[in-house]
Length: 270
Ligand code: LER
Ligand code: MN
Image (tube, rainbow, N blue to C red; front, side, top):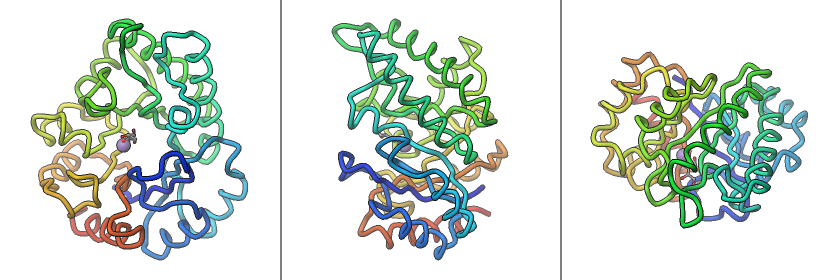
């Protein structure tokens, strides 16, 4: 398993669960100093960051790009994949395609979290799930040209009603035979929704392609009441070899949160 730490450049997401903020070069340098393997980037859009310059900075620091978030499409532009209006759904897919085109050449998959949307008065749940399934098929095909998967993230009930557990996500993928989509196990969402985190990980098995490594209260690992040992044992058992990426609040501050995370990662990994 490999370590990663999140960096947000999205002003509209201020207060959200990202360890580093605003300063991309400085955050990469901090991640290197602390010994992370990679960073995960949450950017306003593909044009916000020069991909060549990012690649040079990451190469110089010996870091990889673990993944890119697409949530800015929702937070800034109010786009999502299950909006009742076709034009909004199409623009949501365009935005995600651009993020795939940004991260793909750097070997980083795009994450679909808040861009999945939710059902509502104008769209019932089966219709929304149908839109989501079709979008995942299209976007995962687009990602395939870069040899990266598309990462789909079940979210807790306060953020979506489409897939709230790893099992819901796996069922969506399996029921439609969706290729090249892997599931994101975000431990914060899981501790709200799953009956047993370790059992959920064992059941999802190979579907899991990314992990958001965070404690019960969205503070860094070790600063809440989540029992990490069974979670790590389950990840070992399924032979998970992807990233444990700190999508956590910068608590008490960014550097302390990053240090806490890398120490917890090192202690729990073996
Ligand atoms: C994104 O990774 C996430 O976990 C969501 O809670 C953001 O809305
Ligand atoms: Mn997450």
